[in-house]
Image (tube, rainbow, N blue to C red; front, side, top):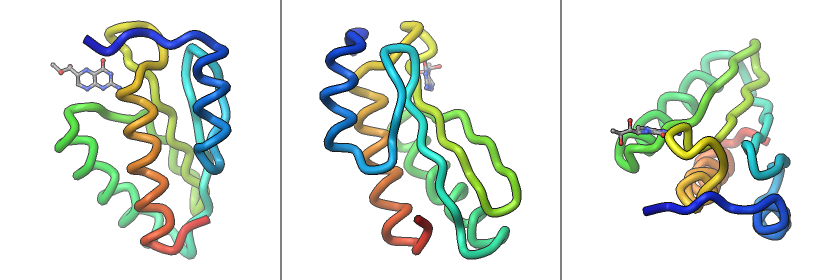
Length: 99
Ligand SMILES: C[C@H](O)[C@H](O)[C@H]1CNC2=NC(N)=NC(=O)C2=N1
């Protein structure tokens, strides 16, 4: 269904995805939350969206720094599913006051 994207296709998409970097293997964004509990609330909100999409980011939590990494594991790289998840994460980051 979702096809692997080339490095060039991912680079083009990243131009419109605030805060994200990466390549055809994976894309990532690190955000800062106002506090550790606020960061956990953001992660919880991302978990709900990920479940609804049946597509899940890798998440690294270090105090108030949270890194989201998106790749389609079953395909071994980045697909539209990851770009869509990244957009949804950006919406939550903005709505919940992280940066
Ligand atoms: C059966 C179910 O659709 C799969 O296991 C899903 C769940 N979430 C997933 N998330 C991500 N990021 N990659 C996957 O390949 C993936 N597979």
